[in-house]
Image (cartoon, rainbow, N blue to C red; front, side):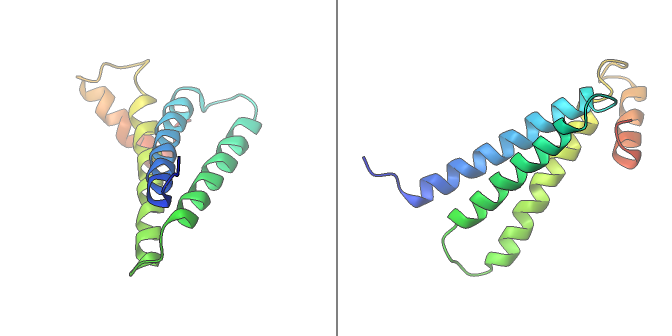
Length: 111
């Protein structure tokens, strides 16, 4: 069975976004303290997935703009998930404290 390059590119995009979501959730909850190798392992995995996804794209017009947009979307996904998951153990998502803490986490980081 032949696998098309376009389906591999779509699958790699899906895996890259799933990794950004899961990484954001993990580091949102457990970013403070712990061994540094976890962060380095996530950076390596995310970098490999990003490069693999960009290499699987077919040559097209505006490839650089699409690559920069995809990279920015992955980073924004990671940061937003991290900021929204981090305050959950301390505040209800329906309170003002939670949303205030989300903004603080976006500004200063999770710790």
